[in-house]
Image 1 (spheres, rainbow, N blue to C red):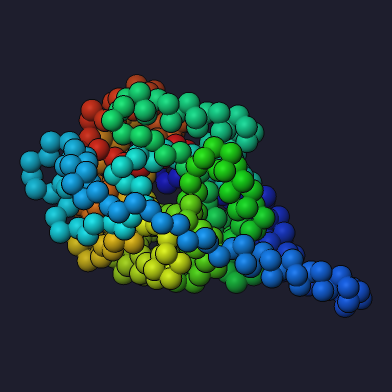
Image 2 (tube, rainbow, N blue to C red):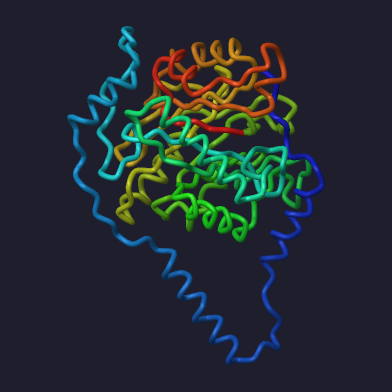
Length: 352
């Protein structure tokens, strides 16, 4: 499996300069009245960031169990559905809905459909894909989503030599605005490069406490051995996944949030180590997402070898508009084909 294209172009260098410049404070000559007004705005913004408490109907455990059994798609090995998994808190999305997401970054057209098309055109295309999945599986409602790469592996070391760029909050806010138009949820994805997940997660806490914001972590660009991103495939261990799920669990409890969906991308065995040690929580819905690109047979092999035999909780499947059709038969799998081929049914679908 080839590596996905890294964001190596100069626009990221420019974005990092923008990010650092946003941290500068105003000059001391600002009038006191303006300072007071600014203080009020900051206080109001902080107040608005705290999520409002929403009461969700109690979980229908009988329905949940029946949907989980259906999700197993006739598997008889005992792997699926996963045994002894906790019931989620009220407000859970999975398995009541299937999530269909567009992935990318607004600075880079080559990183995915989210940034490739103009916003309105992109949202219209997402609506079309949602409709396609609803037609392929009328029993499962579809939740649209925007999956935005908020921390991007880079070809430039940056000031701290970590080879990753944290996107400006202003851009994340624009994605949230787009999502609102589409009644979509948002995933913020982290590529740590030579940083680490513990350093990156808290930087985005003001977004994690929003009920409609969920999490994506990408082992491909987690370079624990110090290699530069893109030179080899990286890795996360169960301990990294557990750190994220524990961190998010704390926020869900503190702010009375619905469960967070945690996406872990994967297309090789070594990308996620010690999967049996991954801990599940009622506050977290964990998805192992088959992230590889290629012709249908190659994707099928990846799902069957690295997703199906190592069950965690839910599965996902990624489709590439361009990379999946590079080789014969030059065909991207349709929703009906995905639902026919794979056990268990993937409940998270991502388009890049």
